Image (cartoon, one colour):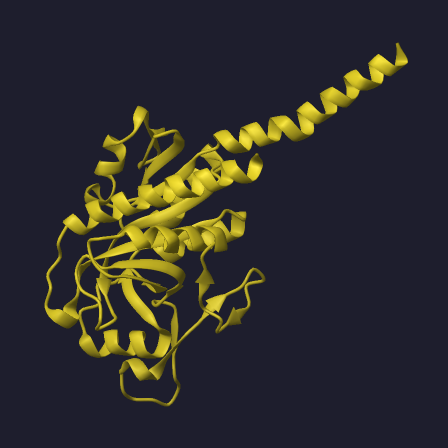
Length: 273
């Protein structure tokens, strides 16, 4: 009898602390973020059993995408919106990963509309300090900075994507056919930078491939929570080649992101088996 009792408690222990957490982890969703309708509508339409809800002014649509639990987060435009909706999404849905995706403006002269940027890292190009005793206002007179978890100023400004997500995004990029696919730095700010000199400075001095208004804010929140994160962007325009905004880039970004989501979820499932 004691032998059976021990086996029973051993089974209960394994179920509660090993099997159940794995099942909960497997059913937790991946949050996919987009700021605008052109960056989210295709993904929402692709969900089965969608559930549309609002948390404050932010919209979240949860559902299933070909066997993958997904939440499409319509963050709205800008860094504050991205940060707020990321916090709410993490707290409410307990995701296994967050992907911020959508359109962007090109910084690298080799890139054109519909080229894909896989965000190996990101930085906030609105966080800068100007140099004292300088009377000009050129880009070369500023230095970018960030604050660490201890609220200390430092100049290691870039946040890096999750290694597994980055690896899978690069693998899926082999199947990207709408343009060139590159991995590198995404620059984020509440700005639409149309000055060639400033674009050149960000590209040559900080390696930025493109700019947009949400990725780095989401990356900061995910780092605080310890949630895997990556930014994925498709060029919708580039001032360097006088290419105007094309909203189709948002549709293309969603298509590629869903490829990454499926591959990432499959890799998690395989690692649990």
